Image (tube, rainbow, N blue to C red; front, top):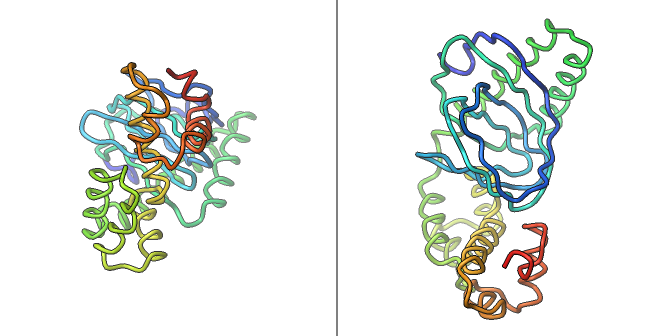
Length: 245
């Protein structure tokens, strides 16, 4: 059973969620989740895949997929949690959507109908949102540009280098703006923000390991100076590197 052909058993909740911790896990859930990330960004790690969920992305989290979350920037999400009698074949995914405000409006209506107990309209909105998700997935999910895939591989290997982004764009043979737009369309995050996220993830690992000063970690992770590193770290993690350490 695919996402656009499901039969909902129960809508458990409609949630507007803003995380207050940097990392958490979701194991052994009994509900599927559909929603939109309004702001912020977070890495979702599963057994066989991972993706960055950022502002303007819609998502489906299959009940069978356990996951860990690492928040890069605290933000807000709107989601519908529901159950079905049969398993859903569609794998968990997250993709950018063109009409963000339409999706937000639809989910806000779902919250209002849930509050007053109007199940008929609530279920109707849940089905409509599933149709939107399937349309986005069909259009974009299986058509990632191989140039962008290679660019991401280059960034993953060279993100601490000053010319990393420039080289990745040049190798893709795309203009700077076109490269940025297609990268975000493919991966749900701009290449510059993705590089920052990679740097902060490495910094967190080095801080946790201990034995290295914050200044040295800043240099190792490719930041121009320790003050900018500390400011960026706090923006993404909600605390300065000294507190994380």
